[in-house]
Length: 442
Image (cartoon, rainbow, N blue to C red; front, side, top):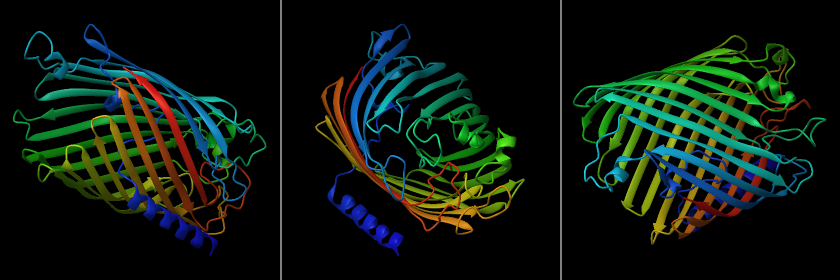
């Protein structure tokens, strides 16, 4: 009953936010690699353009450790700096002495970013998050191209309650690195295009108590598309993935059962613009996972995304996704998510927006390594809700004031039996966070 009342209050709040506030185009600031849309003119250095940036933010988190009871709040100071570098775009080249720029056979974008966090709570030490990325594309001919990408991202904000003896000093550093290579071939008319590639994804944690979750995933994706209208295409995707956990000895004594696995997925559908203002992505497919320990999974996956731009300064998106994803509880989670985003730009200087989603999730059979149940129920079922508001005002082409308010909640009757540290929050929680900052960029 308590979870139901909390859920009713949360959904009511989400409805009020959605009805009363204007739409969103932004997301949380800090160390992130999606900076292309927010960069300035840059400093030209030969064929490259340098884009530096610096941001200072003050924030508040109402539930730092994502707890159901005895929540602990904290003020946060975040200082972010980054430097991106990219080859000069064709549009910028055309603004020079020559009126027509030649298409580039080599395109490059890379960058480094770091965010220093200071919490007013004494239970969290200062730490540094960050990112690094490299995107390289080589197009020797109109019918063939090679794309190489490496993305590293480090997050340090707590992701679970500190149920460990080292809770006052433990690092919540969570590191991801994804390296990929794709070969792209297309017909001379560009009607038909095919891709095949390889991706290596590595995830590891700073703290030894979370080391049982260190893992590596090898993926082999392939896709085929047939363009039958100027802005429409029939798309087919296929992927094989192999996931291995890096510490077999530690897995045997971990609080939750984890297993090496093989996964396959395929989907087919449509992607394109139906009108000048409305576009659609609709995919349906099938996925299956085969685990060395515990149960396997198989089922239908689907995705529907709609995008409507009634005016150049207004954008609205909404959609639904059904997927089955790897999880540290029950090996996998079946997810059904509804989402909506909206945003507008006013006078070219003010950007406002709203983002909201609700997700209905169910894990596989949640077990310990000895085969006993992990919690009070055989499956963990959650309703997760998020609503966020973002705004940015640019005083100059290189100076912006920005802010964000977000609400995140998880509602579940699942109660974890143990006291060892989990990589997922052990129970339901609610969190409000707010940020206000100043950003200088060029």
